[in-house]
Length: 282
Image (cartoon, rainbow, N blue to C red; front, side):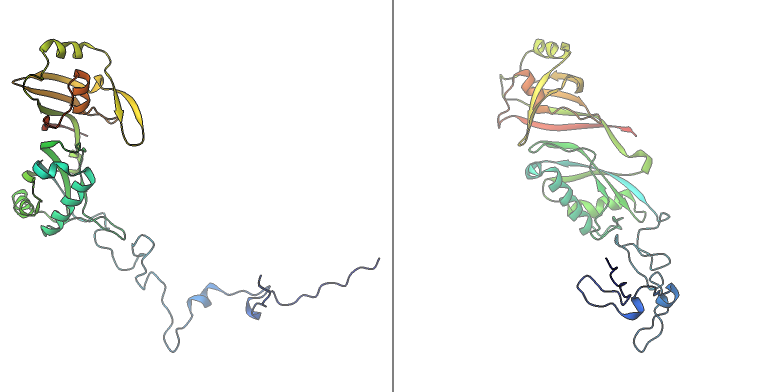
């Protein structure tokens, strides 16, 4: 058999069959220097992207471009702890709704807020714990960051009028970043209708148990939780039940679950109020 004739080397072709330009064919090379020295039509050579103030994918400028506000690690940072109460119509705000309401109030207060970086900046705001829907609170905590020093009294003066109905700002304090809030325990006061409060023997028996399994239900799952490790103290006074619950990284118990363990039904006339929040240093 005779060999087929050698294939003639020609211009490289793209996948669609069109021939590539001669300068980009096999063996051609375009130097980096020539690419940088490209000229705009009837204009000077183009500068590198960093010198043109190019911004990357996260919105940050390529050094040494235009500095992004708030991105320098040497910027001033002042942390404040807000103590506020939530009641009335605000007790029906969910955790995310409360965050949005506080964020809008902070923007309206004209305080020098320290914002997050990126395409959707928002004030640096955190709530150490989430409160159940429909539960009032006299001891809620939020933490914010400002880019300039402002006296706590001035922060309270500017922010208090901007808060929605049902949320009242009680105190503002300047804190260090190392003193971020970590909640150790919370205390609830539960007002019961007359005649529904059990006797002291029921409280002693509940505290003497080593395990208190309670069924916890959500829209997607159901599981059994042992709430005994979270129950710290339990007392009663004049149809009012006081419950102190431990808060850990693994979770905590809910006041409704303690009522369930005592056999007290949760009806609309049962009023639950969070009265105290104990903090520890991280």
